[in-house]
Length: 83
Image 1 (cartoon, helix red, strand yellow):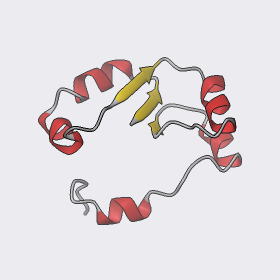
Image 2 (tube, rainbow, N blue to C red):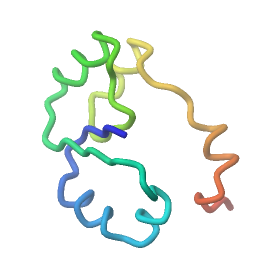
Image 3 (cartoon, one colour):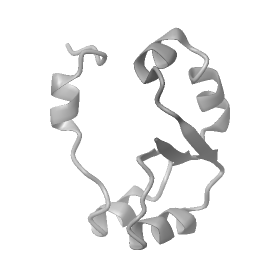
Image 4 (spheres, helix red, strand yellow):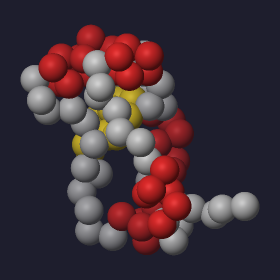
C-alpha cells in the first residue's frame, strides 16, 4: 500500500500503535511524506495513483475523477466505530 501525504509526524506515531499493526498485519505500508500536489496529479494522470493520501488539493482531484466514494467500505468495516 502506497500512501502520499503531508502528515509525517502523525503517520510516524500512528504506525507504532497496536491497532495499526493489528489491522495492517503483513501488508507493506509505504508512506511518502512531503509530496507536492504536482506529483500526485502526475501519478493520477499516469494511471498510477497512490492507494491513499491526505492533505491535498481535493477539489482538483475530484474534478479529475481521481477519488472514489468510501461509504460502502466504512459501512461494512469492523474497525470503524459507527454511531
